Length: 483
Ligand SMILES: O=C(O)CCC(=O)C(=O)O
Image (cartoon, rainbow, N blue to C red; front, side):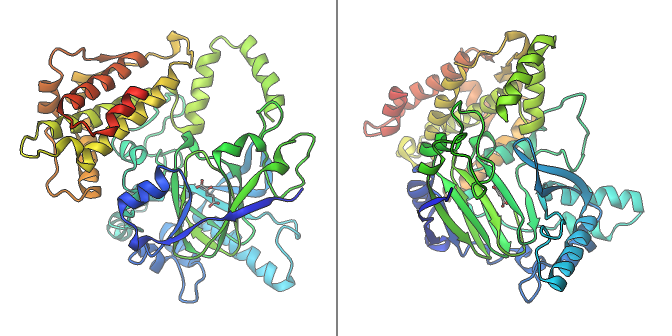
């Protein structure tokens, strides 16, 4: 069954796109785009690529050879993903070089030779570049690499992608500490969402939408990639009749009986060239094929199995929550804490702005609009969480606003958040005395957030404050009313 391509993803010069244009044209409309011109000064583009535009595998072996990484075997399916194995970067590079030699000597593909195409995935490069060097420095009694790579900034996040709550949060808080699996500083299980991917021609990623239905961006440092996208409005078409199993490989022979909607799907396509960045909007399903060597960044059966487990398991919900945390980095409780803290961050910054009497435009300034829009988006998500029934024994949400304000980790998060928003909106010296802000503005307010309703109440309280300070034309407030 062929794949119907309805169009190409738009390509624009990132240097000529302002933050507000990006927000208006792509982020709010939730549309993909390829951006050029945003990687000019990246160290990765220099160090990781040879002068004849091949991946500099030697560089990786020499500098990160001992780093442990996850590698997907692209020829072997395991549940909804490819089978993963763990190996060192040196082992991965060795496999790559052996395969490419065989391929060029007999001019057939490695898969035809029965060799698997391996794809290094989800390498937490930013977090581990430091950790790895510290670790090996200690083990080997060897230090030069530490000094070099503690400072190693492989790339600079383009301004339009700086508003990144997940990574900001994970830089300040460790997400999920499951006592059974938690290993401090384990470079494979460390949680952040800044990955390097590295794979030879023929490596690929099965159809999926991104974790937490977040949006993401992906920069191609070397080689060429083909992306195929399906908008959220058509996602039901790649699921089976029960909306449970999703198509794994859209280029495989997809069974019409199992996936009756598949042939109706209309896809967007794009070839991502070297030094281009792709914006992957929220909830869009995508499949990715590597066309050259590059670097970057059944449920039905399972259902019966799950029902069996439910019967024999003493703490089925607890097990589900542990699995959720193991697979996505957050369980329901972690996610609630995450959104509660970000609600507080946005509220603090908004109150600070409203109090700034020197700025008469304060409530309609771009930064206030941005913060209000954030709160509005959180509110919509939290409203959906109201419908999720989690037995109370397994889900004790609890954020004490007063305690949070005394928490040095939260203070660091708040400073990072202020800095990020100051940068995005080009405000010099934008900072916020968060404790003062909240102590004054939340006086008399209940400090405990233990339910979804408490969080909605806090957001509405902030919206109320905003409306007292707002000019009539503030359209954001009317959106709160509609929410
Ligand atoms: O580049 C790839 O192979 C996959 C990237 C991807 O799908 C993602 O980051 O969500």
